Length: 322
Ligand code: HEM
Ligand SMILES: *[C@@H]1O[C@H](CO)[C@@H](O)[C@H](O)[C@H]1NC(C)=O
Ligand SMILES: *[C@@H]1O[C@H](CO)[C@@H](O)[C@H](O)[C@H]1NC(C)=O
Ligand SMILES: *[C@@H]1O[C@H](CO)[C@@H](O)[C@H](O)[C@H]1NC(C)=O
Ligand SMILES: *[C@@H]1O[C@H](CO)[C@@H](O)[C@H](O)[C@H]1NC(C)=O
Ligand SMILES: *[C@@H]1O[C@H](CO)[C@@H](O)[C@H](O)[C@H]1NC(C)=O
Ligand SMILES: *[C@@H]1O[C@H](CO)[C@@H](O)[C@H](O)[C@H]1NC(C)=O
Image 1 (spheres, rainbow, N blue to C red):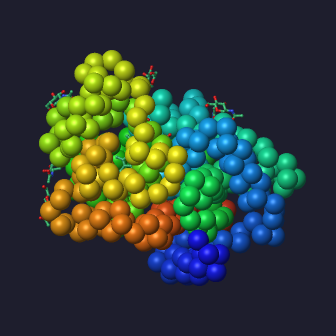
Image 2: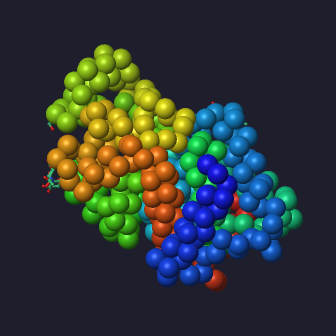
């Protein structure tokens, strides 16, 4: 995309996101400009290296940001290991043996502390920036992330179990879940477009390919005969769309053909001209509309209940409190 065009889109997104989200008045796009101007380029470098090693890690980093923000806000809580005082989020239903990218976050943390000559960049900000860099590197917009989040001193598995949506949710459950986090129907449809990247385990879509009616029968049959048999193979991986290493509109095109992999994906398109259907149709045809709406919605997601000022801390090690 022409850089002038992306400059205007990006400026517009900053303006819109700061107006829409007064709660994030403390976050700013230039938070590290004076404290450590090398921080953001350094994060990008480590993300770039990790993606060159394994494309999927970009997807995993994007999902970490989502799982962080939906559980008590974007506060780095997803990164905390269990302690004697709390059981963290890593073993929650959605994360156990599924959330990944923690080593990359550790690598970023030590690289950033080295170039900044001190501990000034929060783990929560690192997750938000790593997600953005992953999206940009894999073909999405290089949208501006607002910064200045601080890190939580606690985490909760129960909170993760209660706040992260499940793949068997129907449309109204998905919408209620997003609304409970201050997000709307358009955010739900745009952010689900994250499933343009990455993989899902057989166990998360077995019910769909055996029981759902809103699914292409050949698509279901080939998954049943291949990667996801009736029993066994729970951890076998299937790409969430046909171009799982590229941030594009193919995810939405698949929904139009009833080839969404997760039940929750296909809930967004039923073929009856609902508001959600119309958004899926629009994003399937209009790549730029998807890119812009996605950027807008993920900036909004990144502003969920940040810790700022004297709240929380800047963790030295992203896996444990100071
Ligand atoms: C709308 C509700 C959502 C549900 C029910 C859902 C559910 C899931 C499930 C079950 C998986 C597969 C996990 C596994 O098998 O290990 C997955 C993967 C993924 N999700 Fe979602 N998700 C939702 C929304 C989102 C959002 C909003 C984002 C990002 C902003 C996101 C990003 C991802 C990514 C990138 C992957 C692939 C991860 C990888 O390959 O490591 N998802 N999701
Ligand atoms: C490279 O990716 C593999 C998985 O494909 C992973 O096990 C390994 O830790 C990664 N190495 C680095 C340096 O990121
Ligand atoms: C648990 O909390 C107590 C009291 O706040 C603190 O002294 C102790 O260091 C904590 N333990 C761990 C493992 O964080
Ligand atoms: C997490 O997964 C491990 C390994 O599969 C399993 O042993 C453990 O019981 C799971 N934890 C929870 C809380 O479900
Ligand atoms: C969605 O699921 C909820 C909870 O199981 C149920 O009460 C509701 O009737 C379902 N809605 C639709 C439209 O199926
Ligand atoms: C299909 O749905 C039924 C009823 O909800 C359930 O008991 C069964 O386990 C499902 N089959 C698969 C393969 O998930
Ligand atoms: C589309 O279908 C779903 C479920 O099949 C239903 O809940 C929804 O109200 C329908 N929307 C329209 C606009 O017909």
